[in-house]
Length: 431
Image (cartoon, rainbow, N blue to C red; front, side):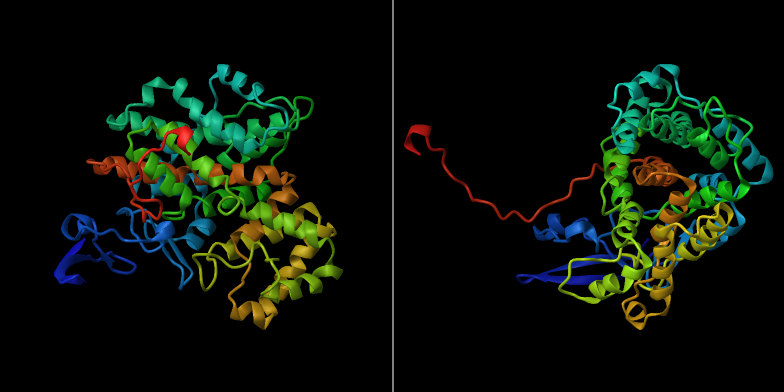
């Protein structure tokens, strides 16, 4: 909110502007520059918007220096240890932790919407067999708007609610079907007697000839992956969802836009890049060579899965994910896998080497989640789709918050134009 007692003064060629200072409940103060152009005829220049608050939100707060991530005020490590994904979904969507009755009702609503319209199977079969699962997800999620006309009116609170529940419920089914299609196996329908994570694992790994018994350790690990990736403030894909939503686009189109943005290797592909790095290293014996390369500032090689753009101390999600990684590797007995051996040795070095400590290159959540998903049997092409399933609730909550505020202003970033000035057209025969 604006602090009426304080303002920042900006001198522009003899003109002094008073810019209101806004005080958040957590985080740095914000200078309101929304009227800067109107009053001073200038723009701000902030590539990547890394110093710009693009919206007001009550959902998620990150303090990168402290290694803190809060959802509606609750620390992520507490939620990951004591809660579960659908309860966190309720928290993000409605602002408070649910009562037992509220949680049961919410879980039942989600469960009842997990099936897809049968005609949507034709969409999957229209893709080439080797299509990337993210390409399939982007197309199919966008196509939901062609099947569910009763939840497209964003001015109707109930339709916004129905669309939200549908996407939370259907994204795991869509991701699982994309996986099944990519490996040439028949689709496995969801089951109403399974929890959210168990249902997803079964849809991915069961076959008609032999059912898949979900191990509770694997289910819990999958649930933690969903929980730890549920929301992460105004990242690239969330900002994309908000920008698409500011135009009045239907919710399915907005989430499809977020999925498309997440596909970028600099965003959702980090855990896939980590596994590819482990493959490149190949064996424990070659680790010293790559450690030296990582320390060489002239070498383009970088350790993937270490450090974080936002967290400058440690990733609060990583320790919870490490615990799940240890449990999964022990359960599956894959400690002798060369890639996982490389991962564990890299982890040991990163936690003990002074160079990594000084540079704050700690193992992050992507490092551990990639290891878990690899051990479970997911190909690297499925890592980002699983991230998309996790982040759906964050996108929906941010979109819903924006729409609920009313008077949505369409996003329209400015630019620093450096091209040609006004020129007269020259006829082609005179050029």
